[in-house]
Length: 114
Image (cartoon, rainbow, N blue to C red):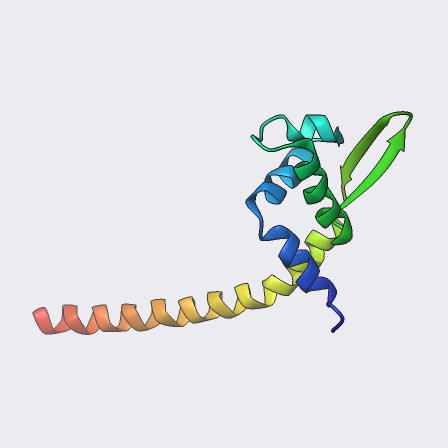
């Protein structure tokens, strides 16, 4: 079964280590060693996380001599955000209706207390 792009993106984002790597890359490009620094995991483990992020299109990797640098690619995050935006609007509308209903109930209660 072929994986759709959003499923791959969300699967990559599901891991807290990968999210932390993306947060670090939002500050600027970094090498594998720099990305591994705050974690108590091996360089090969960080490399596996980077491969998942690269497969999802969330990062790009380049090589300069012996250094391999990673960069954030924001486009897949935009796609995920656009997909979630529909649901944010849905929940906002529901919360607005709930707020209006609670205000009506509160007004009824205040009138009864008088």
